[in-house]
Image (cartoon, rainbow over the protein chains, first blue to last red):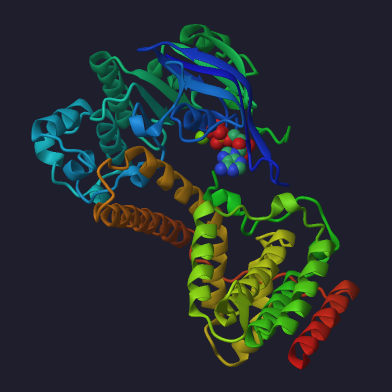
Amino acid sequence: MIECSGVGHVYAAGSPWAQRALEGVDLTVASGERVVVVGSNGSGKSTLAWLLAGLMKPTEGYVHLDGEPIDLTKRETAISFQHARLQLFRPTVASDIRFGMQLPDRTVDDALALVGLDPDQFRDRKVDELSGGEQRRVALAGAIVRRPRLLVLDEPLAGLDAPGRKALIDMLRRVHALANMTVVSVTHDLGYAALLGDRAVVLQRGRVASDSPVADVVRAYTPSTPSAPSAETAPSAETH
Amino acid sequence: MATATDLHLLRCLPRPSPLHRLWAGTKLVIVAAVGTAVVAKPTWAAQGVAAAFLGIAMLAAHYPLGALPRLPKWFFYVLGFGAFLAFTAGGKPYVHVAGYNLGLNGIEEWARFTVLGVIVLGLAIVLGATTPVADLPGAVDRLCTPFRWLRLPVDEFVAAFTLVVRAFPLILDEIRTLFAAWRLRRPELPRDMGVLRELHDALVTAVAASMRRARDLARAIDARGGLGRMPPPPVRIRVADVVALLLAGATIVAIVRL
Ligand SMILES: Nc1ncnc2c1ncn2[C@@H]1O[C@H](COP(=O)(O)OP(=O)(O)O)[C@@H](O)[C@H]1O
Ligand SMILES: [Mg+2]
């Protein structure tokens, strides 16, 4: 179980460039749950993703995984960045998935198949010859073989065409069903929220505006409603 | 924990100050000239003058202490180790402590060059803190005019400089992401040569990612029909610029004379 209590985050705190990204976020995610965080640009989604993955400590409040602060050395969390190339560390697909671990070929092939990449075709491909969507899937395969308890995805659908999006959504369903991981996805696109999670947390200017079953949110923000979160653009400029 | 963004390089202070109002070219010239003078003559007296100049500049910039770059701990460890090595070098002058004859020449040199580094970096930081990054390319373009008369490839240089300045925030962001990814995936084994290979892997990733970024950028530029050369904004020298230049001139004279 992951628990955020009174979480706030200010970048460059104490400097003239201090920038508040999150404020008073209380959020509990049960094991095996699929949550989607929705919000416009600058609403603090990526910041929340980094905090959940344990990559930063919040400047206020705490983020606990099963009652303890997240310890990166335990490898209980994994994250998929929008720019997946930055998380690939080896020249070929199989060697990257294996990075830093001793894994039998079978495990690598299974992970590739799980993310929808044919192992025979992709095992020895160079990561720099892959498309952005394929790189993202390789990064995910590399995350999954580590069996994290929590998988965080920052804008998993960004930059993908329609078939790519569908493949990624199907893949996330499979991963979730098979490994029963807790999956938190972040997206600015309300249209895809229902496909990425069962529960939607709406962020507005760094605060949780609503937390409810995803169907309710999609209904509440149908295009006729002027206050759809994706229509709101102004990032929070407050510093406290 | 200190991260790449905590360095606050090339970030303009949001609160305006007299230095913000100077032309970017004036500040570039002053930093280059005073910096060169003190590097050419790194005596204690010269450094004292340069440090005083830096202090005045920081006051004029309303530079708050919170804006100082936050350096990672290891930086200070390295610095401290350097001091230790310098100390062991010994040399004149000697002091007698508890029956030992200690040579202070090494440590004195180390201190002098450390202070020199701080002064030069400080000048650059004040420049960055009072100048919107977008103003730099135009000023560099203007300042390079004499080189144009010499038929040097100034336009290409300015275009490259513009790209670097524009890409800088992106690069910082990518370094941050790369480092985060590396922390999550770092192999458990190390404490041996493996560390070097890891570092190599991270570097290869950084290079590969930036090549892709550069290629995308190049395509975008081509699609728009090349960079072209925007006429730079006019040079604007005002009274404040003249005052700053005179003060810098006096500082340089003092550095050379002392
Ligand atoms: N590394 C950073 N340094 C300073 N400010 C940042 C940084 N990352 C994000 N911010 C600021 O925090 C706010 C939230 O950003 P972010 O979490 O990236 O939002 P989102 O992912 O929803 O677009 C924005 O105002 C953004 O400018
Ligand atoms: Mg984001």
